[in-house]
Image 1: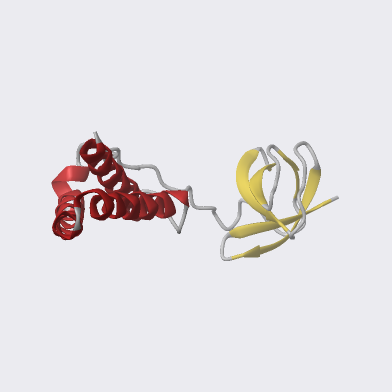
Image 2: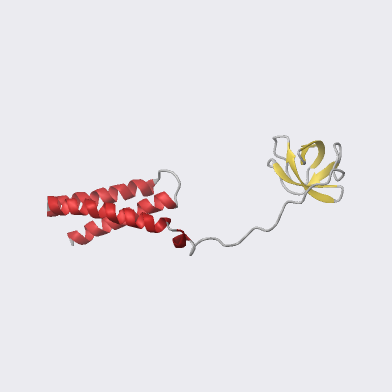
Length: 154
């Protein structure tokens, strides 16, 4: 029974470490839990079975973690869960004469700070001057920088 607990601690610890390295960003509970589980399993093997089994458990942890990490990094492993869709849409370019400084319109979505504004019977993307602007608020164009429309509430 003790051997089963030691094996489960080590296996679950390695799984948590793999999750930490490959899925969860940063140092989280998964990494700390994985390290503690592996350390607990190795400690139990030393305590219950002696030095030879303890050394063997450390060696097996290193080999098992290395093999599972190498297997997880192979590209074909991730192809099974990889998103295979491709984004084919593109941003509609704004014509120079569509919107001019001083034009007025109405927000069709909240500008936080980017959003959609209806101007000259066209819906275009606009940016507020740093403040949030609620939907259905009348706005005025105060500038156009690199094809980005800058608006302020009226």
